[in-house]
Image 1: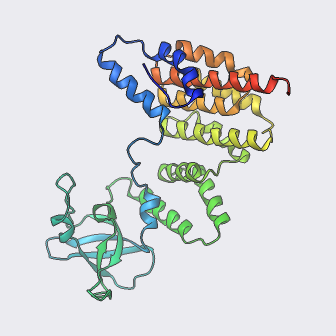
Image 2 (image 1 turned 90 degrees about the vertical axis):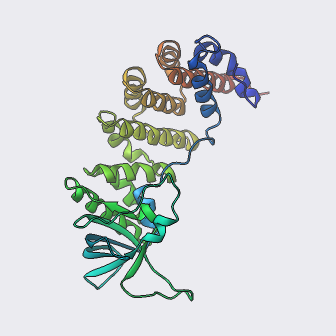
Image 3 (image 1 turned 45 degrees about the vertical axis):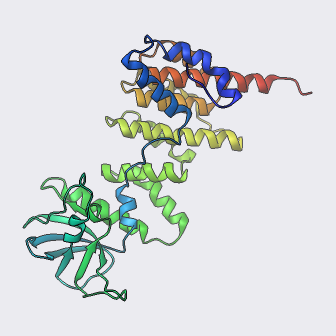
Amino acid sequence: MIGCGNNEERAVIPAINKLILRPARGSPGMVLILTLALGLLLPGIGAAAPETLYERLAYTDMVVHVRTLDGTLRLAECQVLEVLKGSYAGDKLFIAFRTDNTQRENFRDRIDFMDGQESILLLAPVLDSLGHPRAANRFRLVGKLGGKIDLPQEGAQATLDAVRRLSAIQNLTDIHQIWAAHRLLILATNPILVETGFSQILKFRLGNPEMVPTLLEFLDSQDDSFRRAALQVQTQIFSKSRRDQAPLGNEDHVVARLLTVALEDPTPEVRVAAVQALNAYGRPDVLAALQQVARDDPSQSVRYEATVSVYRLRRENHASQAPAP
């Protein structure tokens, strides 16, 4: 049976156990279910998310688009095609990368410079023992293997455009301009920029009511991650609306769309995000639909989230109706 550390969570455990612990004890599914439940109860536990392109760009002041001229030398010789971030006046530069290969962990890929390959490089100067640059044209990769982004023959332009725009945002100095630029990224047609926009909006809790129509449009996206991210931002917006006691003004339409997603979306992770958004909405008129999800959804993770949401909404509704002492 699943256990929890506080009274609130212990109170809902019987219902959760009934819904999600359906396989027989000792079955292969039991370990998966317990792992899932623990992950939901203890969201701080889990593997660290990989660095985004935006984060990788933030670690360096110099980003260049190059073509490798000779990768067999001690220092890879590269032709500079465009400086995407920072400044560099030369038409060639040299990359010290072999030490990164010899010192890498066995499970990591080698860094290779193939002749003719175009790449985006995140660079820092090679320094001597006194901390001075060894040469004006000699660099190392920031982040080792993560500092080299090889461009495919098809789709290279989308990556280059994304790096240009993200680098421009990182050059802004006014925080309000930066936040506004993050919000605008989800309006882009470039999926790299959209993904980055959602990541930054969620990270810094930048969701606001003006974004709601755009978020609803993303619920029709073919990309599962975009639908899920849009719902997570909507959760932020609902939470802030309740905290500030500032209704959005179009809750009925928004909630109707969320209920449809919670009941019909083909991806369990997206349905979980829809249930979480409805929970953040926090009104008792969604209880019946959440009870249906808790009872009938084929996914254990969705049933779990819906059960917890039903419990929380019932408790909050009961507390709000209790007479004052």
